[in-house]
Amino acid sequence: MGILTAMTPSLDRVVDGILASYRDIGGINHLEGPNLPSQQSVARIVEDLESLVFPGFRAEQNLDLAGLRWAIGAKVSSVFRALSAETERSLRYTCRIVKDCTRNEDCRGEAEELVHGLLEKIPEIRRKVSRDVEAANRGDPAARSSEEVILSYPGVEAIMVHRIAHELWVRDVAMIPRMMSEYLHGKTGIDIHPGAAIGDSFFIDHGTGVVIGETTVIGGSVKLYQGVTLGALSVQKELANRKRHPTLEDDVTVYAGATILGGETVIGRGSVIGGNVWLTSSVPPGSRIYHTPTQVERGRAAKDA
Image 1: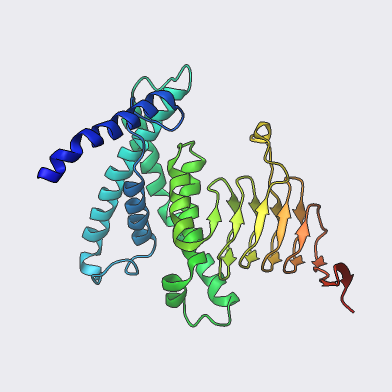
Image 2: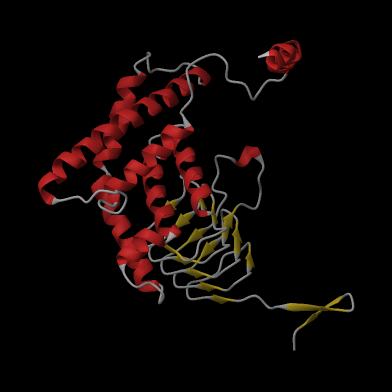
């Protein structure tokens, strides 16, 4: 106690300095107005939504048919309450920064309506995710079963959460879709912006380092390997509302380390983009694009023989 008392004046000065920085440094404070969505709460909601999409895979206790309705009903109610509360925070934040907000303070009712709409989409999301799981099981010779894919493939978890976050994104819910995608980014190393439009039977093999930008459009039966970037040619803020990221048509495969950039770049149906390729222009359907390696000899770059 004596040591703590002796330190108090020194700690008081520390506190005064921190408070002064709050007054002097703006842009990273949120001291007034409604609470923002909670990272911890959103992470728990993601885990609960996963248990609805993959029943029996994300629970320590066995689910039996006799008690299934009760268990799923309890989980749906829990998600509805928690996500409605976080969505209300998001809507109130939006009202605070947008002029002429027309919500008339009825953010809670709108939040519940948005979340109810998302939960109604769960069966459709499950149908899409089942095709993603099938694509992974079919597309990877190392896969032994769908169960193994669901439990151990980071790409499957990433696309599953993306399909949920995308539903909130298209409903103009602020922050929460990004928080969901970044939570999975931290878990899997796969960065999928919730704005990206991704077709059925999508498979990311291995996954680490994959980046899929906001305005990317991906067709059906597309396969990406680790380290692929689907990005923008420019990061100028004034281009925020334009298509900045590429389009991949159906049945495209992109191998490890490839970078494809630009909103006008279209990878034609059935094309194969080899590892470490750098692309900033479109290629026609059925293309085979490969990187020509170089080696450095005595300070000069020369093509391999």
